[in-house]
Image 1 (cartoon, rainbow, N blue to C red):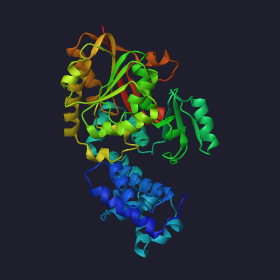
Image 2: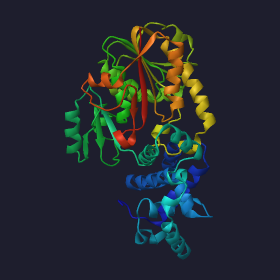
Image 3: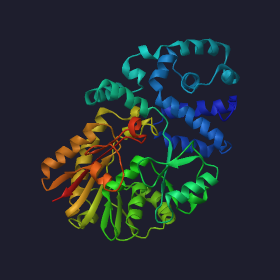
Image 4: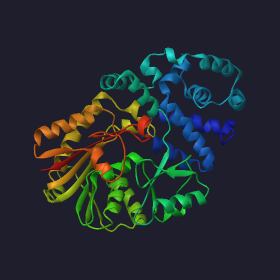
Amino acid sequence: MTVRLTTALFHHAETLLAELLRSSFPADLVVSNYFRQHRELGHADRGFVAEAVFTVLRRKRSLSARCADEVTSRRLLLASLACVQGMNRRELDAVLTEAERKWLAHAKAVKVDELPPAVRLDLPDWLHALLTVQFAADDVEQLAAGLNQPAPLDLRVNSLKATRHDVLARLLADGLAADACPYSPLGIRLVGKPALSKNALFIDGRIEVQDEGSQLLGFLLQPRRGEMVADFCAGAGGKTLLLGALMRSQGRLYAFDVAERRLARLKPRLARSGLSNVYPVRIESERDIKVRRLAGKLDRVLVDAPCSGLGTLRRNPDLKWRQTPESVAELSAKQGAILSAAASLVKPGGRLVYATCSVLDAENDAVVAAFLAQHGEFVVRSAQEILANQEIAIDCGERLRLWPHRHGTDAFYAAIMERK
């Protein structure tokens, strides 16, 4: 532990956890708002509180089993600190009552291996059922274990402004432990979660925070200088910035999104990046006239589709408790419509990449299969071959499938198609 647990610090974690458990908003937004309201918390304290509450969200079902009949935010937090994060009784002593000391001894004695599989793996029943259809039992265990681990902090080097070698040297000189990512040629993985917002490398746009798996999507699209390219669901623009750098800021790169708020978050990142070929465009829907005007004109289109986000549970563990079979079915229909609209932009010989950060076939292969059945003019290309041609050696298959327990990334899926 980098900080000593005090009653005040525990109170912050307990209060925030209670807010998270009753909120319908994404956990990262709730946590950010809480820290904005409590600026007295230093970086180390914020790190402790955030990790404490996110650990509870990851392990809520098995922790609830340890709490027996009294599942409260306080007990969930205590059980998590003792049974998952490994704090001993001496470290917890400042916040425990005598009754809690006795209860915690019973909580630690619970045999987790004897709990029902979905409870033991901290998955909702519906999601566990779907995964057991898709994967062998051992693979479900390994995938769940990988998704229940905290994610590392990955950076992407802006190749317009720096090389990975130079950025690594600067990070190490600044006292930050870092190493090159194993797959992305631009990726760097940090040890721990250091604050970067005031780091010179971040301020002047030489680095961006981006998971290594997300970076590989840019190399699958493989945009070139002077081409016309679209990031069809750009969001806050992490992949847009990578595509622009791969194009060496030449050509036209459209960043489409339906949410003005998300595109607004792209603007300061764009200013830092040094790119001049990016055109953010808010659209009403995938059938917007601004989209239809570009029909058949684009060399490459990336569709990082809105999805359940179940491949990002390392970072967003609340999603597994907020998604439902009904929400996944709605997303699948939306994904099919978006993919079909985006495909209309691709000119003959052009490339279309469909990607999600979901682990579910309903959002991945099923969507692509339905699309290909209706669009015989598109053929599938091998993700592994495309990456190998760029000297990226990774065992990912014809369709990119990344897993936290195998690749150390978020879970990603991508299908690469080209118009005949």
